[in-house]
Length: 89
Image (cartoon, rainbow, N blue to C red; front, side):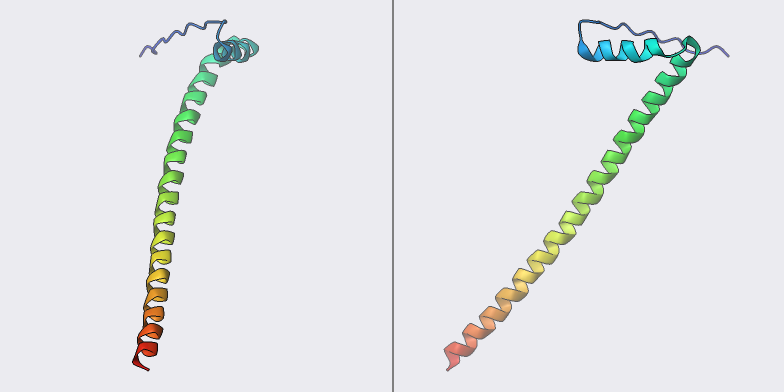
């Protein structure tokens, strides 16, 4: 089985390409492919982690909002009880 060959073209006028070139140039030639594979996997893992964090935060904020709404509702009900009591006097 033969491996896939992917080539990249770096434009050293761009800062990100220049940084990538500096990093890749500092690696031994046999380690470049491994480094790139690991970087791609780490990037994808980071994206997945960010998505999970966002979902957890949305859920937590929704639960917090529901609690706050319930507290307001209870507060309004107790205030209305006082008003009704005072009106009855």
